[in-house]
Length: 594
Image 1 (cartoon, rainbow, N blue to C red):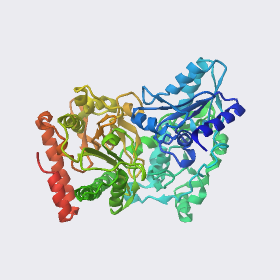
Image 2 (cartoon, helix red, strand yellow):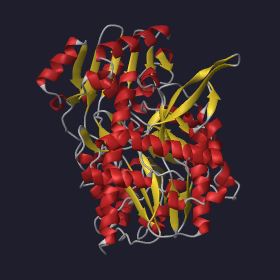
Image 3 (cartoon, rainbow, N blue to C red):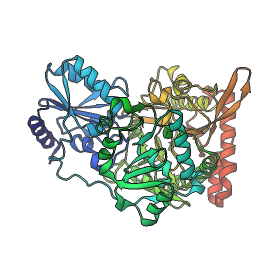
Image 4 (cartoon, rainbow, N blue to C red):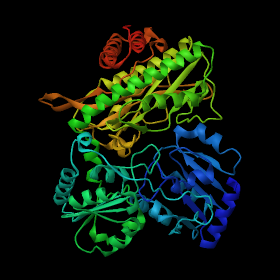
């Protein structure tokens, strides 16, 4: 079935259900950013593969709303379909609702599947549409009879994540969670976010591509907990181990019936990730609506996790050294590997490292103009050949039992213009400026974002994505609550705290020509105390050289040069003991003082 045929089939379903506009978000019942394929209906009907976007279909329009990270990609992937791209002005806002209000008449009905809309979204949806005289209706999943080739729900096995990696037992975590519940006078806590369920129980899975999570809910009360999951995913010994911790396994689809039966005390839900279908079963007076205590606990890495992360960064650097040596030697031999082939080489080099599990996301290997596509993913048949000229953007990461990595480097494959060097140097200075920040406790990510942009702004340049996101520990590479962003949202408003691991990734993208991004992961650590209170700073955790051939040195101040030299010295000292002579010589050359 073509995309336009799928749109026609959906419109027929809409008529049957009395729906004038159907909203299809990027979401599953757990409000995941990355979805099991069963819930990837927005990708199936539109062809747009980006991780963020919302489809709205009426009888005479099919629209996709997405943000600046995906404009170039969406324009390309929507070609050949009826879909029209709508560019979001503000990344996190539901501007498709404004379109519905402007293009529908009072009395018409907007439908969506309440399993895939968060409780927090519902109030906004209902208020805005009601004010315009529109009706919001839970019409369920209108793709169920249209998407005939739909993948089944995942059934991959769930496995134990050992305490010596996690740094804390599940019993200890559940005890801490219950203490938070007691402080808030909540009798039950319903955890819906997949990474939170996995973290709380020291379990991992593979239901979502590149994210070691599994589809489940966790309901905790003062004495016991219930894990709602497909029981076939769990081995008998795992079930018994969970039972010994007071965690009892229930069928995944029994969650709604269980929630309907609870009538005692307060149920704590996180409105950002609990879906409407479940939340609306709870009497309003029984809801305690607040961010999940697990979200913050998970974001604050403990000392064991931090120690493991340092080792994971050394392994990741070793793997990348092997991959970049291969690229250089391949180009020198006259061969021109494709972006996809280089992505697979990086994956293979990581796979040779101890405790490697998989990629933390599909590698972004953007040669020349493809570097300007912020979330570009090369594929086996359509990726560019890499020639020994121009610049190459390489953004990749690994999932190891001892940590999650995410690193971007932009390298010169030949001499480049001073114009490109000046832009790259502005990006580098922004990265260094943020890396060196010292700030009072309770500072928010939105307050620091400008440190990374300031040097681009001086050239009247900018980039259309956040500067950084939280990163999990052998968990999702995008992890709330914190981040560096230029707009007020959850990530921007979260206070930075010791133990948070966050990406620092300013960039610049010239459509049709090139992309530049430099990304390290930074750990928030104490900086000291004074009469003005507690102060914090960052430790740069990522280890890999930054290409000095792309620096315009007249624009690089002495303090930034000192930082770069110290960083390269750290990279060499930390990683060289694990290298053979060839690798060590390569790294020594890349890390030489400037």
